[in-house]
Length: 343
Image 1: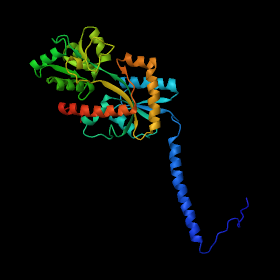
Image 2: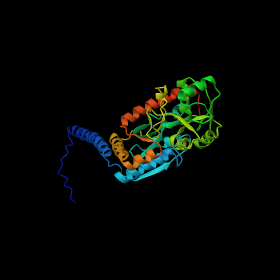
Image 3: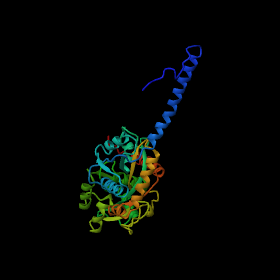
Image 4: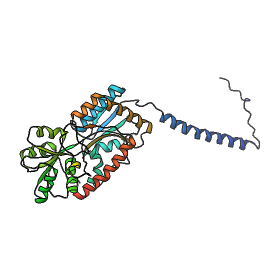
């Protein structure tokens, strides 16, 4: 290639400094133009461009894990996603949640959380992440009520009779839970707070051991998940007097809610939802929301959720964000009044 030296004439005289200034200004202007273009290109990258990791901050086999795998299967089947479910149990969900909070916010890492997500900030003195500020809510996918189950030896046929019995024997009725600060514990603490009763709490290491002692009569009552409690109710080993959701469940339509039993402010369900790291592009969040919502409408996924005693739900990202904030505030009061701590 031949370069012609006389094609550009540079005046070495008085005007040269002005010309150089113009070149510099033009270069700066080009940089200012390239920056927004680069951001625009980054924002319009096709999603997903690689497999999506769905973190589950629980061990395999639990409710959140089962639901996560069902959602992942539906997304893959209906929308062509390649999703890897990554179980990161430990630390009361803190380990997995921290990994998700610090992941690259491009939509390729999401997390399936349960209602515990809104409680941990009250149970622990400090967290390595903020459960509200460090996440972009995508969608709430399901909720699962608890049954207020009594051992048959307890002479109470409904909530009002149970409250009257507890008030006549303050501190003597013994209730079990899956563990200190767990969902079944806090559901009962909320119940105690609203009904102004006092009972003795016996925490167990999981729902299974607590249910065994409830059936045997070692403890007299408990809020238990639908899947684990209902078979014992149907067999007559336990008696269900109320359900913790705001409305009755089609699974047990004859069981009234605590709210309609005289305590309208009561609601304590286990909910499940999907979050992304804070800063995930709004367009990606909306795409995930739209496609997961479409999957929830599919009869297969809906059936899987209802088979687990859950109720499918579908929210906008904004609705889910507001719900999480309200849950954090609600359970902070319950934890404070109960004195529950995990540290």
